[in-house]
Image (tube, rainbow, N blue to C red; front, side, top):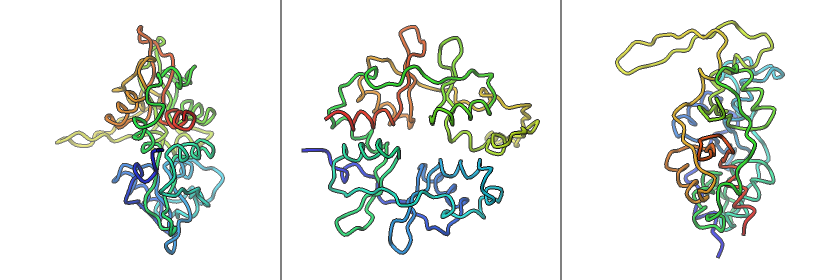
Length: 283
């Protein structure tokens, strides 16, 4: 019997209304460590708002409201409307196929009475991998190769444009053929005012907090990838199984794994999206 959505969905669901503001959305996403919120109006699901929607709102140069403080921008102005939903009794594979087909990361889950019961996300599908046919596949079977990369000395603006150009949520920073860091789409949120203009400001002050210490301000002249990238990264080998890779991602709370050779050279990239595609493809 197929693995069912109801077994792996996340519940209860975090929701907002169309008239909530983006400051509230941001705070909820940070507090609950989630990347999307279901938008409910009058008991009905009317949309979804994601980290991507939030970042697009901050980066937009076309919408007049984009220049307003986030506590003055409403959810209804940025949310994705008419969301695709799925029944609680459907298979996880069907949910994965819907995500791949629509290029989305989550589906609100309804019961037979059309009541919201949960949400199934890419992370939930990754949790289901041990119970799917794709569990024994090697990473090399589904990884993306070649990998879009930048160097530590590329500017943050270049990193942002590469991610937008290739439609990727993670950019590997490599040096000498080996991965040395990763920049995620969410990392760019703190640099949103910078990457949105044609004329870049000459500097930005970032405050870094240390326990028991004041808040020293570091000054960056033209921020580069090295200033923003996560350096404590983990990698995988091409012969690891999808079950091993998925469990490792879940334990570490990460969404991607650079794939390296025995010589530690970058040869591929494995993301949650690749794992979802594998679940969708293999019966």
